[in-house]
Length: 253
Image 1 (cartoon, rainbow, N blue to C red):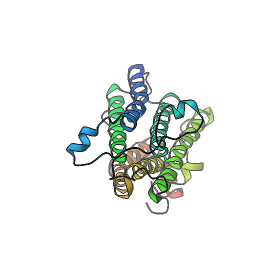
Image 2 (cartoon, rainbow, N blue to C red; image 1 turned 90 degrees about the vertical axis):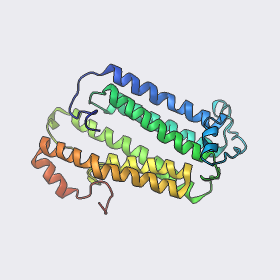
Image 3 (tube, one colour; image 1 turned 120 degrees about the vertical axis):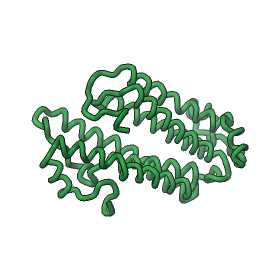
Image 4 (cartoon, rainbow, N blue to C red; image 1 turned 60 degrees about the vertical axis):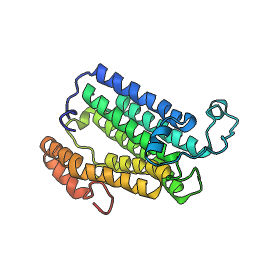
């Protein structure tokens, strides 16, 4: 990852930023095609999975929502996909200060679309939650998703506000949400990614996706970022590790 995303590079990158914004904005359209028009059904058949019929479309009295003709369950999933796009593009346009290379923009876009599409396709089969909103996996997954998305966004805004103050130049931000774990953005990302997978694919898929991201963060992203912060902040980073001992899982790791 580090070879396509250079930390500390704050040069202007209009091409990469435009590509990321556009591709992420197109993702909900693809996911809607899966939910409403059966895109990907032939692939499911090849994998031995049978698509199930969507339930009755929700009637809210809100024109653009009712026009989607989706059941409450699939509308929830589409809302989650759209939320992830909004979160990514908010980060791109507001909180991120680093250059967006074309290669990194393509990687992020393709990775997220593949992840979302895989969960969306599973959600249209009996392998997932069968379209039932009342299942514990859907309730818990939804909670994890929304808490995770808002936590990640708020944490990034808190850090950005701190860095915008000239008095904090060269200082490491360690307060508020960042006092819970040293990589609270990774904590929150794992929560909402795992939550979405839990809603769309059930317990097995939700657990697997969460474990996948935890392994990636613990095995690669955190060591790489820790080395960068140690070099940049020196003693501040050492004090932060003592003050906030947990890296990604509060009370555990």
